[in-house]
Length: 211
Image (cartoon, rainbow, N blue to C red):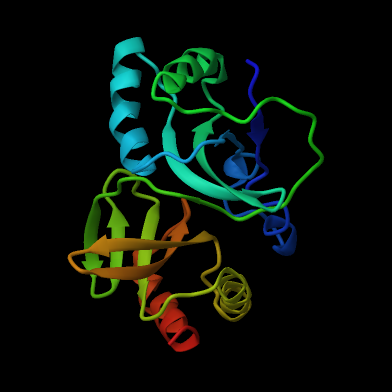
């Protein structure tokens, strides 16, 4: 396809630190990333608005999220894709290029470790004060934290919580939400084993550690 397509191992170290994976069928989940060489104004808006049009036009099932990553010491705008419908990738790349995106050319690359940021629309349902649920994914919850967390602080803190809390059958992630004139920070958890009756304990652990 004459462009660089990166495939991620989403949690190469995280699961290895646990006694067992919390959601076994998702441990091997991978994503694809296309790196955009030129800077696109309002990149996220351009991708999010056109993604739905492209999917509808060609009846594509592939999920498309705008984001950014540092790759080989350079920051790129990027597009995250799932690998479920990889056969649809050529059509998608053709349509993306029509949006004046110049994709990084294909090249052989060694394994590279990087933080990747991406954005998506999520509709929240309030479960209790400071705890919200993803309306479209019943296994995904969000716990409010009162300050912005650096990634290493988040990782180390969640390790500590899992070691001290009997409720540890979950994966976790950092996220934030733009609300009116403010940015709200959350720790997200995902698990098919969520027990909402235990959320009080988990929320208190998060509040105490990340206050």
